[in-house]
Length: 309
Image 1 (cartoon, rainbow, N blue to C red):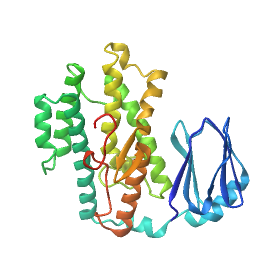
Image 2: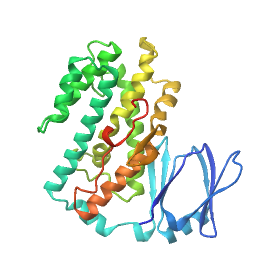
Image 3: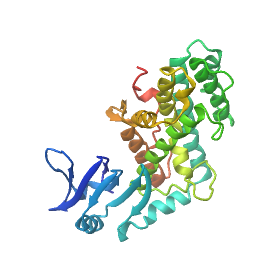
């Protein structure tokens, strides 16, 4: 498949196709931006006000380019050419992955998540007993590793913020509201990349399938959760009052910035969105090859995480 995943996120954009090239004109832009359609795998449109010319739909279909249209950054429409409505080989490999391969893919994912939680805990609460215990737990090979590391991480996280009695839960309010919103933004970003690469988000490697859920997105977003945690930590640390726990317009603008932070990933200077794309790309390769080896989840070991270097 073609290489590029193109994101259109300017507030206003005019999209068309000329001479086989995607043409994007933004409000106030100095000149139109162009990219050959034959080099594009998918176009993700998160712009709040985008005009899409019918010629682009036709040419994108001819070139096998998917269009992912989002509302508030959440994919709500997926337009696929007839030739890509079903990627038979990818779908078959995805659905028939052996339990052994799925288990190893999940193990690599959780190892990365726990390593990133440890990196953040060492930054914000280096002397905490919870951080010292997390250093041991993050390197362990146990069936309940994820849950044990999560408990220790939240102990260190809230110790750094000097918050007592915190319990992590989707409906418990307070700090949880900030975390839930940040994770929703992260989920949307992962979903965009999954659709862009033709992966079905309903076929996961660990999370259970539920109605209207996206298990694969929940799986692959796990190592990136500490990116959101770090962003929220900075927000609350600078606002040591209860009002800091309210999801305001200012907070929404702040937390979405995590995806634009620059990191060095596998020798490339990318923002977090680009890293997510790289991880999804490597997962797709692992699926098509039916091998764990190509999958490269994001970890502190192979990246200079902004703010923690």
